[in-house]
Length: 97
Length: 392
Figure 1 (cartoon, each protein chain N blue to C red):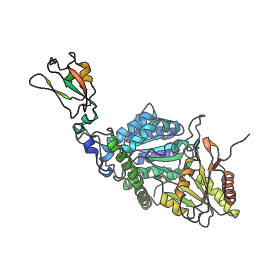
Figure 2 (spheres, rainbow over the protein chains, first blue to last red; figure 1 turned 180 degrees about the horizontal axis):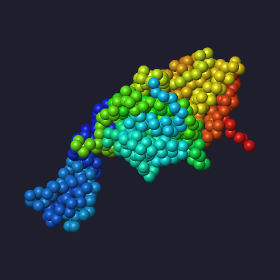
Figure 3 (tube, each protein chain N blue to C red; figure 1 turned 180 degrees about the vertical axis):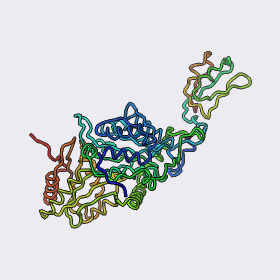
Figure 4 (tube, chains in turn orange, yellow; figure 1 turned 30 degrees about the vertical axis):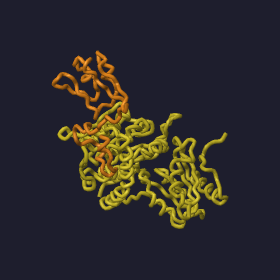
């Protein structure tokens, strides 16, 4: 249930709080959970796609250039991409710094 | 006119679920509920009931299957007792949250330990707050009728909540009584086919039971509370309709010889018939004693109860369950709370009796009433006490 969509009164909830539209998890913008964000150094990046494969929230998407685009709307800042990167090209940077 | 037959109350309960044309039964046998599901499996095996009988490996699974089958749009019935009900505990909360109108019979039995297969209300009182509508039957006819009524209420689009119909294990479940059995065609006039409002269907997929973030959890709880409180009018209306169809009238609260009564005895379940005998005997002795019994326990019939208590000076509440370390039995504490701050608030005294199959006699009811009168005159008494307990 998306945070932005959940701000409704109890009378308007679906029967049994069911989700009736497929793909509604897109509306759950989990980016605001994040305290750290991954920053990729493209000089070190070898375009292997490990960040894209390992990300549990499908935050990375391949670009035509071979690099990967990061989506801050959904990234929870878990750091798995930084941990898995074989070239240590990804650094976790504290939000607000 | 339906025929009156002599039948074991457990079998009558199964016949009621059969007459209601139940689609799915998922149950695990446990004393003293066993005869109910045993007979239902016979009815399915003999082709008398066109239903899926799911013989599960535990009550946790039984309730899980019931939630699933009800979510798929099937009219669903189950029955359990005591430890089985306790094992269902976590799924019991999910059934109302998913709005699955399951009907379950609970053959009330004590909880361990020590192990007891005998009757009291400790199993159901531990499940008081799970969000189910809860009714209590006094006799076999009422068991049959309350099950039919339960389907009608549960499946009402304004309710869509599960219901537990409580009957006392052994003292009611295993006795043979003359019962007017309604046939499936007679029940059909009262109970329309179940029309699910939200259904699991591959043609129109939905997600049931997603996580409730802090932004929505409170609202989800508020909705169930509003539905359960609001279900009372549907419960009452369905009883009125029942009376029109079959001539038997039921109300949330049953009273007996309350006119002019100064002291009232409050009971639940089948022991109320013994209490009636006690009340008759006390009137013969010149004591002005009435009897009040809850048929509807959840939602709590507050207005009806307060109305019935007008002019009553002393109330003796009998609980068949103990609330360890608390202020008295669950019925007592709730009833006293219901009367707090009312005009002419009576003095309320609590008694715990009939635990784990201990007989409750006419004399014991008289003892409770006499004690309540004595404490009231004195202006004080114990918060609550246990009746019939040996001190040495």
